[in-house]
Image (tube, rainbow, N blue to C red; front, side):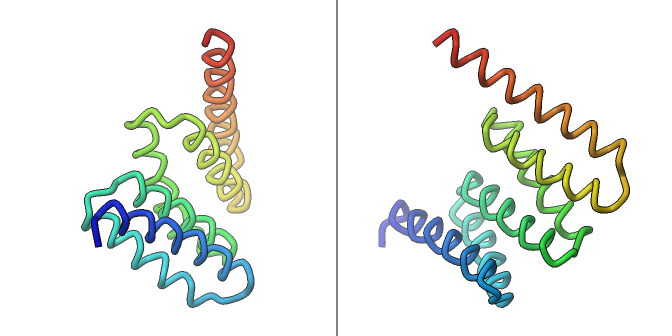
Length: 129
C-alpha cells in the first residue's frame, strides 16, 4: 500500500473505532491507541492529533479524566501550532467540559473563552474572504 492510502485507511479506522466505542465496545480504545501510534510512525501528525482528540473524548466518556486531559492537550498543542482553528475550538470545548466535570471551573471558563475567541477569529476571517 502507498502511504497515502494507509493514512486514509487509518483515518477511516479511527472514525469506525469511535462509533464502536459509542456503541459500547470499549475495546475500541485499544484500536484508537494503535492508530495514534501508527500515525506517528508515518509522521502524520494531523492524523495523530485527530486520533488523540477521539481517544480523549472516549476517555472523557469513561471518566478517565487524567488521561483524557493529556490526550486533549496533545491535540490542542498540535492544532495551535498548525493553526487549525476549527479543530482547536472543538478540542478546547471538550477540554472545558472535562475541567468543568472535575470541578476546575476557573480553568474551564478560560478554555471556553479561548474557544470563543478562536470561533470569532474564524468568523472574522470568513467575512473578509
